[in-house]
Length: 169
Length: 102
Image (tube, rainbow over all chains, first blue to last red; front, top):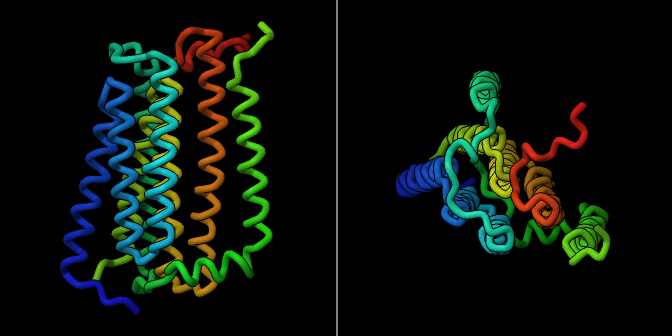
């Protein structure tokens, strides 16, 4: 059982603030490249939250995959599609008020679910160190592990097929 | 020590922000970015539940791990589709996807 000191609570508040702040900034930025940078910062802070939960392996993966490669791919596509700053009426769907209402209703449902589940949550325990993850990945979860490599290969081939310079129409 | 529900509330907040972005933005690239943020927040929920329940078989962490794999595959294919879309329409607005409209 990990004993979290006050320092880590302050760290949690800091990380939570950066995640929420950068997510909101991403939502309200008109420039696509800026919004990709804010996404990278938010995902970087997510990695810190995983480290706070002592899921060190996931924290590293989050850093490599999300904050690293996915951001790079997104920036690539932003640059290849040549769309820069645009006006708000070009950025938002016409039925945005409907989306706001849906999200509002959904947030009440989510809040209710979280409130009802809170009494059943135990204290946080330190699980998911690299050794434990490696153990589980190569014994219990060996088959999904192999299948996931197949998924990645299939998506690689699919992405190349879709994005290549097409000869037809 | 940090109560477990704090992590859940954080994940829920980020999920809602990203959902709002996903539903309101026209640009396919920004929709995909919001989708990634939603996926990350759900992963955080899985890991929190795993730590709070003390599951030694690491089910939640494995869910988050394989979710990351699927997310990486999805963003690759999704952005390839966006590129394809850009070549045909010269923009990335999702309201141009109206071929099936009756």
